[in-house]
Amino acid sequence: MKGTLTQALGQAISKPVIAATAAALIGILYLAYVPNARASADGYGDSGAGAKLYPACTSCHGAKGQGNVGMAAPKLTGLPSSYLLKQMQNFQSGARGMAAGDSKGRQMAAMSKSPRLMRDGALEDLVAYIQSLPDEPAAQTMAGDAQRGKGLYNSCASCHGASGQGIEGMGAPPLAGQSDWYLLAQLQHFAKGRRGYEPQDYRGQQMQGAMSVLRSPDDYQAVVAYINTLGP
Image (cartoon, rainbow, N blue to C red; front, side, top):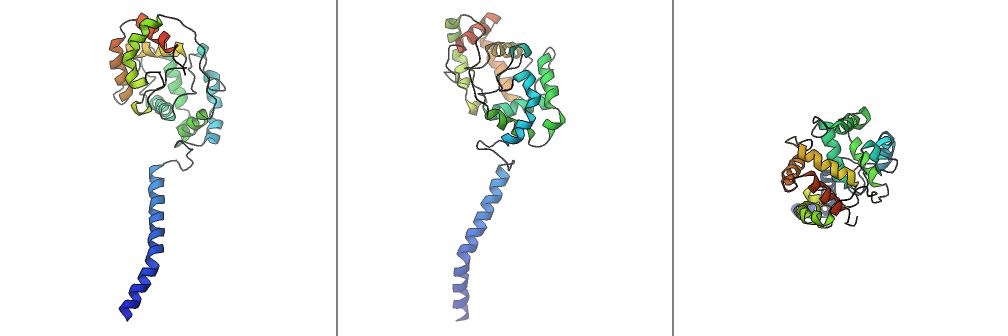
């Protein structure tokens, strides 16, 4: 009789206890998976906190993240959160912006190390705010042999997409709608070893290898001219 009563009581209690325990474990696992408890819908930081950090970026990148050719600062809108975060981390760690001859990169590296951006979660907050800004295609500023560039672009499509839309899983950002002068400058940087110089920058090194297809400044300009024909 005693055994039967104990068994019945255990069955009555076990289901809600097990359910509560399972819920608690799921919550713990979720918090372990998402390091920023204030994460936004795409898994990044607090855009409200990021709005307080962004004013330091406006003098170069513009109030709406539209970029500024005079400051050699690209537009930031339209880039995936993961790519923006990785590049900021690269600037902070020295994996980008520290090569000889990359004066604007050094400037950005210095900015990324400001005390406000070095705090835990600050970069995620800044990325979340940039994602809240409206995205408009950058104005086109250069021309080239787009037809020839189309053939050259075939080697880029496997990472950046046939329409230049980017493939986040490849760590390759969208190219269509980006500042054309900036794309040209980055091709030159990769060709000269100013980007992708650090082993920890795996994607940058991968891009350096891909530059073997583009053999001259005319090639760079042609492929960028073709990218200008792609829809954002």
